[in-house]
Image 1 (cartoon, chains in turn green, purple):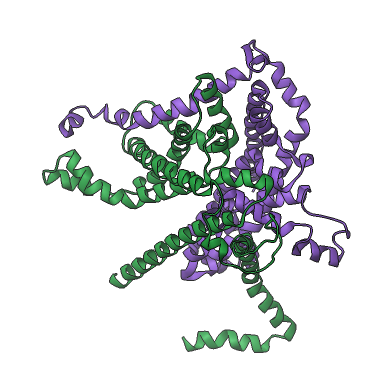
Image 2 (cartoon, rainbow over the protein chains, first blue to last red; image 1 turned 180 degrees about the horizontal axis):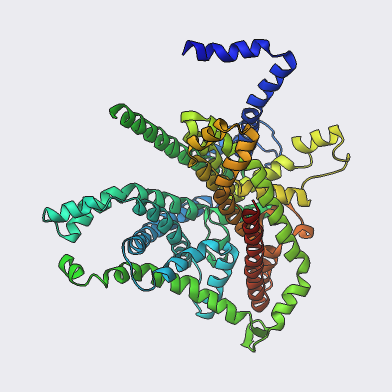
Length: 287
Length: 285
């Protein structure tokens, strides 16, 4: 051990200064680049959060004027904002529940069973993911207009379920492929019927994947603008509110909501990452 | 119920699939069929009639060629840029970040936690004429004193690149992460230089991630209209902008529908061309 650690040091001391600088550059360029890239990724987020504390002089929240907490205290002070946020949350919750149920069942059918039309089902699940959102939105609106369905809350819900389902299927499928079926067989051998096995064995083991799919679906739903824009009718979601505001002037309260959503999501994700790495650590210790 | 499923095992997959497939058929396939039907209509609002009006497609190609070309070039440029920017970054996370990998991955996904429109509006702040970036570029002389970034193709491409960055980065990360480190040690043992080992081991093994990332980035980028609308001017408008305004503002459904199919067909052709290039490179490599 001591010989190997001494090795490189000896080599370095024999190298000229130029070579040593070159080695240093080579070793750290990538790290420096990574730092820059992370800064680039975080920059707009920092701007959004920073401008939630801005105290704009006129209606335009583009230039930094001064620090204030008023926007956070008075987040509700813009007409229609609270309703838009509530609608977004309601649609995201409802469509996530329905899409997660439909998607989980589909994933189980596709992974677990060999049946006629399996390939077709796979393609049908994949297609919405490969279709530009604007086409999904336009085609749904085309259908609603032809069928004379009034667009609004429920048409948004229907559209969101449609495009979240595929994400749920993909997420749950990934987990099902590596699923140890012996556990289920063992339960059945011990006298459990199929429903009991599903409830006590399959569902708990799939729970992390189902939860991941649901979280993904919720996030996509709450963020969706393009499809919602087409099928919303008079209903306002948070992204639609932002779009409307962007045509005139975006109030700093919009930054407050965006920052709050960001902070909540990041907190959930960080806690998740920490728990996962703690568990991985414990498993390594146990082994 | 359990025993029913047991006796009719062949029915089970169809029962599981039925609700989801019904939803996708009703609200994905059927609408697409209607869009196709509408794309062949003629007349003016609200009296459109189905007349096999193929001229809608011809019109889409002739009247909106600039927007179509812009969709392809902007999406292509943004995809290439995202690949160049993302690859070294996820390489660093996969091979250098040690046990903090997942935390750094979170940084890549983080922009998705800010609503799409708002992170684009944030670029409006950053690239604004009186903003810091333009100021520095003017001082260095890269931009004329009255030069601007907003309302240019640069701003639109930059916005698209940023917005779909994670879709490029994550698949590449997954493929890099799966590489067996013993292969790299073997390359080293066989006297491959780090560059050779990268070009002949790491890069080929990450190819599936690059392909997936390219597809995932290019498709939404080609259909985007938000970046062009917020960061550009009508001079930068893409096909998405035309579809959007034809559908929702001008109420010209047939043209909008035809343009939607032109967009999908163009994306398909671009992806097939890409698949050919990737495929032939694999053959020669």
